[in-house]
Image (cartoon, rainbow, N blue to C red; front, side, top):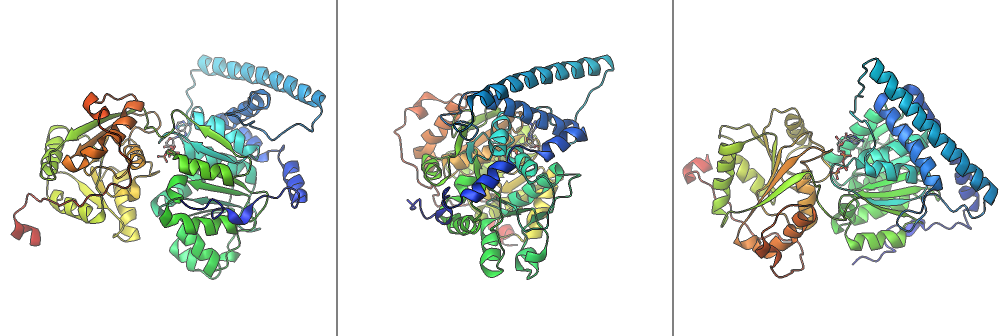
Length: 498
Ligand SMILES: Nc1ncnc2c1ncn2[C@@H]1O[C@H](COP(=O)(O)OP(=O)(O)OP(=O)(O)O)[C@@H](O)[C@H]1O
């Protein structure tokens, strides 16, 4: 277990020492130009989010604490009279908001108006309702909400609101994502949401990281993987000391050993004492939660639904395929009987991804593959073709298991059993997003039976039926389950060698 002081060690917030910054930061909080502009802009879905934020802020100002924390910073020093006035104003405001919403609804009905915006958002999701006002209030936050429940908007929206307008004063916000694909998707989402606001939003590409001129490029929001950003900080002397807002997306993945050192270097480089940090993921292991509790400053914990459970809109199924031999047969049979694209097929590693692709590419289906041995451009093409519907079946390693938002994936097939319960939750979470339904099928062999119970527990907690014999299996502490798997081709050997 990593020493908690290792991560975030460089930026312990000393209120006494930084009392001036703290006071300045507190002064800044009440006004919110961006929120006002969003409302003025009349972009329906952005307007709805902004209104809901206002509503939540009013509500939060008068509501009970969340999970043991109060949503807004302590108001002990404020006179009671002001609190009462605020409460009264808040309830007046709330009434007026409801009256306005009612008038809007009547007006729309009368004129037969149906509105929807470019992002298709009608109302905020639960994680957005909760996290947006918390982050706007300047509180740090660690949040766990199901896959596909709109976490991206939950951290991008308050970030844009707090930054208010573009500036050329250096990097002001950083979003860390574990993979390039996710970083590039988040970059696009940020740009979509900031449309019309001329923020300088940059994706940390290899070229940008290598550019000696980087520090001169105006950048409000920087989205990156940890390694590239660490490289820019250490080798290119990129200054992150003005960063006001730091998001660790897929935080439990970022806290894994392979990425932790780079994440720590970035977190330390973000040395602004009034920074607001937030952690988001669909899975929040107890160890990560403990770490977050000890290192974050007065953070609010937000859990939507049950911690570490799968999205309830996914129908999950376990299929026994005997041994490795049975997998290809089962897959082909599934495709013959009911191929309903788009379908994602997850395998254990890149070698198996290549082998399965070789096997399926001459079948009568449009299949493609993505893994870390492909070039950046090949990876992007694979994603774009899958998004565009040109690829029906995408074979993938866990490189795209987290965060990727492919609209309407009908089925996720775990060709190889996932190596942990959280890997399972993220993999199947590529389906059943934003309230849509989806299917998840997990093949298992004799070698996987020992770990079935962990998956079965996830299935049960999200309302799926599981055979009782699996639930009665002995409990097993699960480290990474990656057995050596032999790929069994159905093609004659001479054909394979071509
Ligand atoms: N309020 C909303 N109403 C409807 N759709 C929404 C809303 N907010 C976000 N979405 C859409 O829901 C989808 C999933 O959102 P997002 O990718 O942020 O999920 P997530 O919670 O980050 O999932 P994951 O854990 O897999 O990363 C996106 O297509 C997004 O545009």
